[in-house]
Image (cartoon, rainbow, N blue to C red):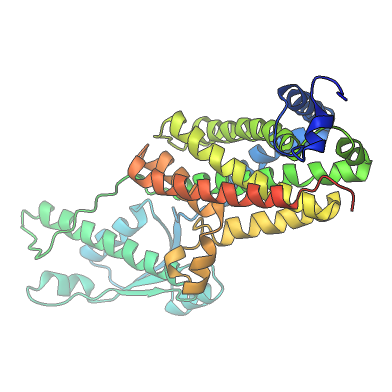
Length: 392
């Protein structure tokens, strides 16, 4: 007995109904998923509107740079040197100087977080500076409640002091003797802007959420609408069913990734130094991993609301906390560092920061590509294991 050209009767009788693929059925299923995507406004919003919105939030809402530090200044010396150093502090592009008449007022402003620190130039500053071998002290008090800011205040004021000393010596025709000369040189992010590494990491977080959220709804939606029973009663194999859920959303995710990179490059003005071939390889493996996570959740839960909540928790929190995007992985406890190895976002953060800041360096990208390939097989394999071609 034969049923059509697909040979479904013979396949089931021989126990091979799950092991082969019909190109015609796969195309039909992919077309069905594509129509569902375009007929569902939420999918379009998730894939195109949400990434751009989140990217603007990350790009403009998170800034780790301190371009203007509020600093108090009290000058007790009326000498020329004290006035010159005060002018150097006021003219610094990194400092916003507020002059105070008393030390007590500066201390109150520091306690109230109106300023981040203050500088006191004592009475005999100019006299001691003119005397050879004498020490001209300047007091700096920084807000230690935030150690990073306090360190930045100290280094900034020290830099202004060193620059002013060099300029003073040059104006007087003197040679300032320094035992050690530091000439800082920054590689890959010469402007030292935090946006240049925040944006690549934020693209990882965004694509993790988008990919997991999109596919977390597809299988659960089939169960809720009652169309899964019709699919299970058809000659569709498990492989065809999984591919039809992955391929359309993979294409949608790649378009979303390219949109994020374009916004980062031409609107947020973050330099991109890698090749699009490397971006395609890394992005494809990462998307397949997160799509596998979403499909596994959707297959196991069969409820759209619960699947969406689980996908957000399983994708967003690890991508932010354990990927190295914000918190350095090497500073985490040993057991937690072990957990990060199964998180695809860890490898995509590293790859995206390499592509944006350094370029296509295969020596750095290949280990991440290998690990992303492993996570792809793990999560898609888990989805295949959870997918059953029978009613339960």
